[in-house]
Image 1 (cartoon, rainbow, N blue to C red):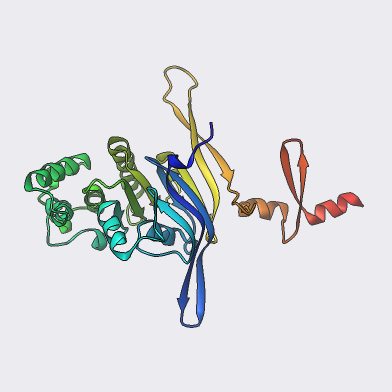
Image 2 (cartoon, rainbow, N blue to C red):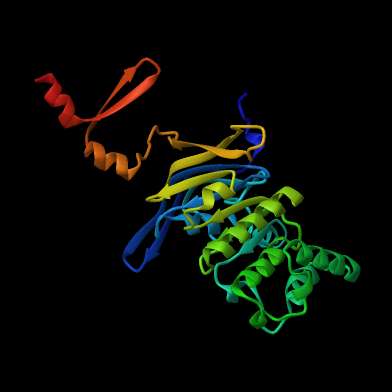
Length: 301
């Protein structure tokens, strides 16, 4: 069954972002393509400087791409007016940052931090109270809601930050390295929380992370390299060995091909095959064979 465009909440096509610094130009995104389904929980990984945080800022309406197309929820972010972008950021997108200082106001309690965006959106006192208590309970902080950030652990602060990000019930939550300053066990709990909120509220969640264990926590992982989508790991099925066994997650990994036919092979494969600037591509039934130029020369001799 072919997935139609309407199934996607986020569509990025041939996306470029170029930063100009004095006489220098830094290319952060180089023709990136990405599609995210509505209600999906997915992660974007990549080395520092690969463009993943730039992509997240574009999806949140915080930055404008230099070229290409980007639509979120059927809206073209490139053609939206500044006023519409402000409304989009306030109502349709939630944000969670790595640094606690960007998420929480230090002199407000956890309850007051979560309630604040609802006050700014003119929610009634009753609705604010119900929503704030509901979310603090959902993130496991029912008994800590009166505490200020300084009295909360790093993991608890991030849980408050996530509650703030979804307080106004946005259809999209964007998280930039939300576990970057947390230990492994606490980070796993944060991703479990993302899954719980995704299932409870149907929020589309995009997480940028360096966490190598993220694959088991999300529906799909896209790797960005040199400003382009490179690899994709997709959760495909549950498998069982015996009826008493717990289901095991099965993942399938793909190399992504853009509309121009470009693909990025994993670096380890390129090193192993000694692939350089020129390679030979041939068909073998329903397969494509990629081999180094030197090997084909040796065979012809």
